[in-house]
Image: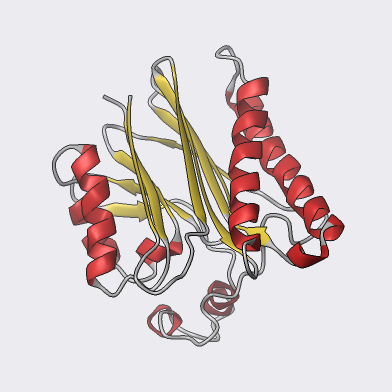
Length: 243
């Protein structure tokens, strides 16, 4: 199992409010990528809390004998606990009121070649095959909702003035709904990333860079590509390969 992670402040932000945490578990892997939101340092605090709580909750409860349903329950529970911690911190500290974070997390089991993925918000998981890319997660954003309702097209989504508005995020509400996905890697690379990457790079561009050479170089090329397009936001990602 190989993991390569990169994070960059970008070219337009004064602070990096993204967070990535990666752990190798024997021959398997656990990865969390979060994108914080909130004034001053609140966004950074939210993403840091969310990533660490999700990781710690998962690692504390995980057992290699777990079946698929138990892994799902643990992942969903980990994000729910993180939601409570961020929410309670936001309410207890007035200067952090309203802070929140996206979260996409994955446990990749080497033996079964399976990735178990959860997400809240618009940080994404992609399966990067040799000649095609598949977005596994669905954005919990206002514009994605408009697309699903038929009010705007996919083409109009990219330039919509409210494209960064989330309808679901960790820590904003007392309770959270968490999406879960289970996929076979089949030799493909798994990419987890914030919107600092997918917000300014096309799927085809992401695929080309993600599959280029060793994963460490691929991760760096993905960040460089977003920077070349203006780096309008923090850029954080992790690439996982079951090798």
